[in-house]
Image 1 (tube, one colour):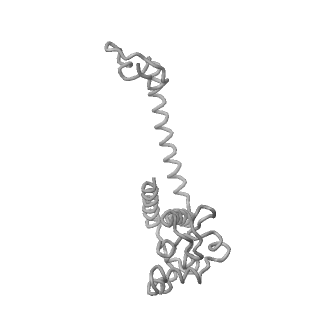
Image 2: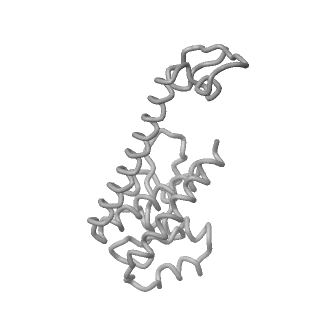
Image 3: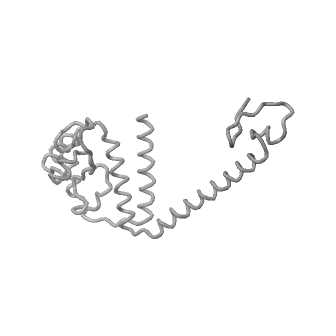
Length: 186
């Protein structure tokens, strides 16, 4: 015995079965309904893809930058999972919310906005309520990477213009990095 591919009713496995039974259906109606359901699913998927493309076409550059920032922040939180807060050293034990904190803020230095060496996981208290707790952040960055590294961050050019093509490629890259990290964690 085996189950029909559409209605999941058990059907006999016979050597002299008809074509629809060899294909795994209990009758012609189930075979037709299954084909119809598959065709509808394909049409719905095409509609979803077209809707996603239409939504992307009406997005502004700032919308795309916001989306990319969310993806990069997610990547940083995944990358730094288990590490203590970069500012205060509070452990990542799951008892508090984690943020992706910029050493040089986006407003002060947009050229480092998506640079992952400028972004590290911190607790919500330091990032939101203490504006990043920058003094402690700087001390810990010097301990981790050295003073020359921090000096390079502090001397980076202030502004950066991002093209839509660059933003799209960056979104793809960081999504793949997030998937890789999630796959490695399982």
